[in-house]
Amino acid sequence: MAPNIFITGGTGYIGGTVLDTVVRQHSEYDVTVLLRKVPDDFSKLADVIADAAAKAHVVVHNGDSDPEKSIKALITGLLRRNEPSFLIHLSGNGIVADWQEGTHIGKLNPKVWSDIDDIDDITSRPDRELHRNVDKIIQAAAAEHGEKLKTAIVCPPDIYGLGRGPGKTVSAYMPAFLEASKRLGAPFYTSDGTNTRSWVHIEDLMTVYLKIVKAAAAGGEGADWGREGYYFASSQEASQIDIAKAASKMLKSNGMPETAEPKAISLEEIAGTYVTPSGYRIGTYMFAANSRTRAHRAAKLSGYSPSAPTVFERMEADLLAASAIRAVRL
Ligand SMILES: NC(=O)c1ccc[n+]([C@@H]2O[C@H](COP(=O)([O-])OP(=O)(O)OC[C@H]3O[C@@H](n4cnc5c(N)ncnc54)[C@H](OP(=O)(O)O)[C@@H]3O)[C@@H](O)[C@H]2O)c1
Image 1 (tube, rainbow, N blue to C red):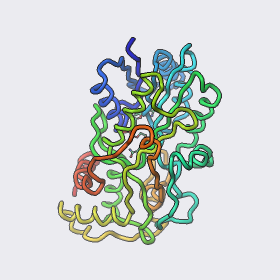
Image 2 (image 1 turned 45 degrees about the vertical axis):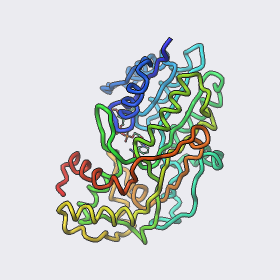
Image 3 (image 1 turned 30 degrees about the horizontal axis):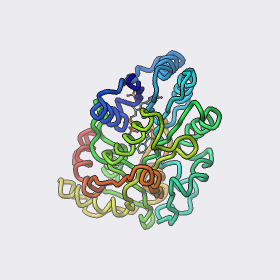
Image 4 (image 1 turned 90 degrees about the horizontal axis):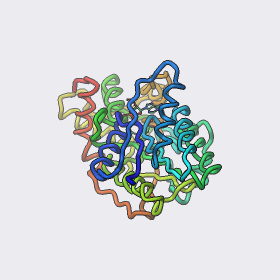
């Protein structure tokens, strides 16, 4: 019988690309996708999600990383099954970012996180860290039901490159950076701008996803699950000052003359450069923090060797794509 794969987040940047990749590479899989129209009473959607999960051998949850109700509904559904099943969840490098420690804002932090060597620390991050709420729910379910519920957490850094899904095809960082740069009159940084984040091209990330989904569909062999099932995907890193310098050149060559040089802004200003729809000021996280990670597990298990163009090679195309979706005139 063909494995049944239930994919959430198919209208999104990452989930849409995962959907496209899985369907193209494995036309033999029976794929079900969640398309949402969120009802006022979430419990109705929770039932739909749980029922779909109960029919799936493998759930690939690429919806927003943080809502707890969705992950709980997925786990509830998967635990209704008699045979072992697999849950692959999308988290993010925000979990190890140092923005709340405050010691290296706008400056290089020498700490580099390995998803093998640092697994104890990664799986016990303080509750205040981004994505920790849902990572914790998954790790608790894996600890309690590990024989029946095999879990993996894919934890990408900032992603670039064009997505291939039916909905959103542009990532998060470049549109946010471009919009704030326009408001400030130039690409920007704070302090000396040496704070550094890891990056991955969406196509390299898909290599990591495909290996884990294939391993799950085949019964689990070839991937780590449960507490050790934690996968960074980084392929390179870049400092904020280097991103800002490169963006300045590219924006200038696209007709934004006032951005010839990046601009240093204050800590207070940078906090407000990115405000989430729910009102959180997380510009410090986005543009002044360090989150430096290494994809050691994917390299060890499947020889992960990223080969896509770098963030700098893709930056002009990504800024132009970002300007199109945000209607930001260059
Ligand atoms: N993009 C990056 O650079 C990046 C890097 C690392 C980690 N991440 C993590 O990956 C997640 C997704 O990123 P993205 O760039 O793909 O975002 P995106 O393009 O905005 O897509 C989000 C997807 O999640 C769905 N969704 C939202 N709330 C949901 C819920 N409660 N239950 C199920 N599905 C839900 C959305 O569906 P609807 O269309 O129905 O709203 C949409 O399909 C983010 O939460 C982020 O933490 C992103």
